[in-house]
Image 1 (cartoon, one colour):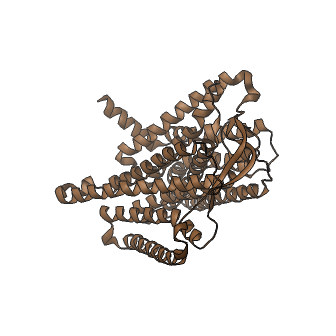
Image 2: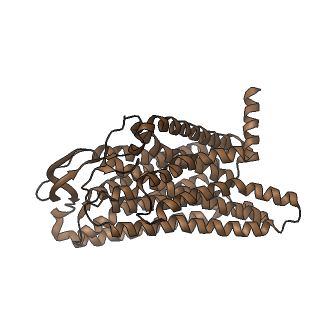
Image 3: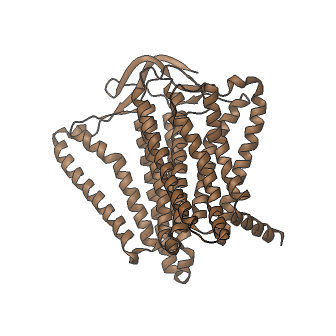
Length: 483
């Protein structure tokens, strides 16, 4: 771990419109008016497109996505600019600046690419209008919008990480500084307690990782290509598998490198990035499982209205909501953790988890601990409670089915999901809701291995071995391949 005794840059200060000091109140009034008009206009556009079925077309779908992105884009920048104009705090922490840059670039690139997609939509509508409904299908529109967003934030991540890996040197009027030892990077202790077994652990974890990746890719592919699986249940499953795949990519490769002695120190920005994506995807998975529980509830307890309630728009909004909650909570957690000053450099874990990183701080972290517990309750116990209520209603409905065969079939549709739910929420509850000092470091690592390595593996194993429809789809795909 490298540390250096010199002046540490811990934040920046915006100069803003300091050259127009005498006009700042006028600028505040003008920008506030424009900001409110922007927000109101975009909210109206999104609401009108949502409620008016005449506007449920690809063109207006992309317009609603663009309006949503523009709204978030303005929220990232303008409120802070307005507060600076009226003399409120103009300083921003290093992590806050990195977060603002990440979201600014992400939404800016997303907007550019969305405009390109809208141009393609108009091209198809005018130059190939007979095939318009086929080319610009709902699935194609969803994939285009998702790809645009993913591309924007991927490029944003690359750019933000590249910038915040640079050293920053203070000038007397632009930075807040503090003279003390600067922790610039962390090292993971990993599985140092099992030093003689590290090669064996590497082989086991690598095998599990490859099976997890292969299994989740197979699930996503088979759901995409087999029209029999184009239902809300399997749409949510494909989203969960995609999320689990990225979730493992965030943690396991670094862990495997450390096990064979190839691990390098991780920078503060790298650690914050890993924590951000870990939290986002973990919470996204929690709420996706809740959405899947609700889907099963509607399918069994209200089957006649299933296609109306669980339509494509509701499914996409549920996935977007799960991802949005993950992003908001991750931003809150990462910002609160990386505002702390750090005095130690060795993370007693194999990845940048919240509590192990907080233990490296020089100051009291009681407030952060309380925040972590509150968030854990909200994102673990609340979804778990909703799933529990769904299954109480499901079981009571199933027991009313007169035929034994009908009851068995209904239970079978829920068994796979229930298995994943029990393991996922069980591990998360033990890891984040237990008292801080209850377990040893080795026990904490064992729990972490369960929800970072074993739980993502459950998805492909449970849904391919225990789910008849997925097995039938695999057999159909294999049959087509052989023929």
